Length: 476
Image (cartoon, rainbow, N blue to C red; front, side):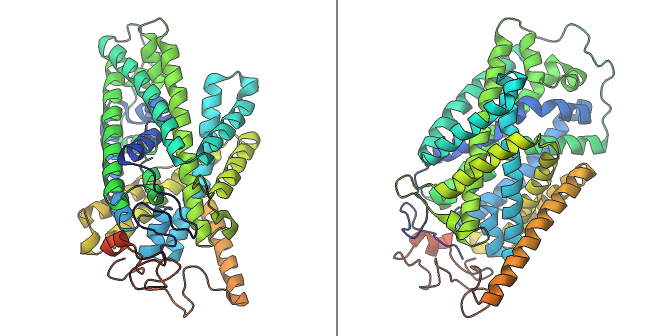
């Protein structure tokens, strides 16, 4: 399968991307995805759900995220190509599992991208200008993504630094000040087991962006070594930041005060007076932009991989010869996000996005569980715990969100069923099948022409375990 997998640092001229991202770049993109708008807004509803047990909810979210991250890192080392869990699901579990993961990721994260743009615009623009500003931001960041992956990493690095500086201000103020006046909510939120799980779900989605690193697997230098290190490093950094921020909020505002305001970090900055709340709002805006840029880039790479395998229109699999960016799919996604910004507030779509993210990671964990001993870097128990954690968080979602997610998934599966049937009647084999029929044991464009290498001349990293082998063969 693994169409377009190339050597560690060079592009495949049949339509693969360019390997330009270093370990530092990959870590920054992961942090930009995780230290996004969520760190500035997720703690209020999480505190309302968990009360004084907020840190327990954060620990549960971190545990599920760790399981998912280790599975993603382990799979990315074996399959260093664009697409993330879409590719891993196809290789390890079959085409339908991979398609389900890819479809949920593309649809859900496209809705999330529109919501992030609206979040940024709401923070910086008057109400009448929110949607025009949001559209302008999407266009600007799409242009950055089209300029090349190294430009994307550079802009993300700047935005992450601004966000971290704002968080540092909050930590210093929160550690040295406490709210002197009574909070608007006099009764402290009552913690229940369900409430703690709900807070874990909210906080999980706030820093689940480490998957963005895996979706860029075809653009990372020495992916088998770089991606696992980048995923775990970025997640560890984000967990430390979130834990420190949570402790500061509980110290400065208490559980009731944190739950009472939609912007608890700004409330902490207000305790010191002066311009600090403006600094924090600026950091929140930068974090929103960083997360939006990372999401737009990650969606583009997953959609590119799906187009290359003909699960989306194959014309979208084009790569720009100069920038090495899948420019057609990136332009289309930018246009779709702009339309969504203009026609909806996306509140329902965000619930479907949450459902889709959990399904995406459940597939990743199941795929990691199926890997053979040669490619397994972590105990299988972590993958099992990851699946269980995803299912547990799904059941805490509002019923409307689950229903919306099921509908979105069903639409995608029916559409694929119809297109597969049409291809079958026309005699065109799907990308996931070889011409002899049945699932391949190593062969499409990346592996069908030779045993163990690609047609560009033999991929040493593939033969070492980066592998273009079949769904359940020795190497994959």
